[in-house]
Image 1 (cartoon, rainbow, N blue to C red):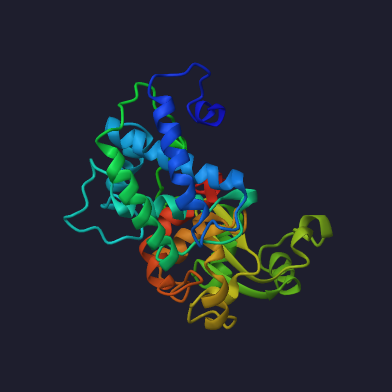
Image 2: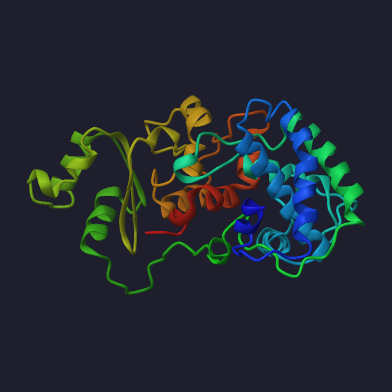
Length: 322
């Protein structure tokens, strides 16, 4: 009961609490015997059951965080869920097997320090378990009580959903560029991106083209162990992406490696602090990451169709962050 009350950020029990906690316990055998969670800890299995009970609680009340999430996703991306093709059989005010599949994906795709990998939302075992859980929830739906106090932010923080993706900065007519940007544009022939295979090459550019002082502490020494740099200039200033130039399919980029992009570029969307978000937006806007794909079947389509959601989900505060 404590875990359920903690999800609702309260200590006082409501009349409906025991019913939903009993549902979570009823779901546990399905979860613990599944291929996906058979080897998970008991605590992890219980967490899955609690999330699914929270989902049903919101659906029965026809409000709450689940409705907030699906309405936001529909407003933002034109569909109620990422990844899945929703037919007319999908009812946004009911429970749906696609909802359950997405929730399992979300549970298995933690972010931040807990990030390990991206779950395949089309994994056969995940979809099979989703069907079994959906049937159990469907059986329980008509008997489920309406809760008066629903849990907040149990799936995705509302603050993250509120963040709007901004347009890339554009220079206005007559606007004076920052000195670094003006010198960059002169050196690049007006191009927004330049590529450097080593820190030494980047440092020489800083000194000779940007006119930086030849002092070690002025030349970004933290990047000394990195290579394959992308340098991006826009009216706000310069952004640097280390160890990523091999992913950029730019005719002007001699460092491009399609195989490396296929295997590794998805991490730009999933690992926090790896890459400036404005540079990621520029790359996607200009189709510079065409070979980026998630590490499973149909991963390219799933990434490119859902890249903004994936970036928002995994990057968290780094999505549109400084």
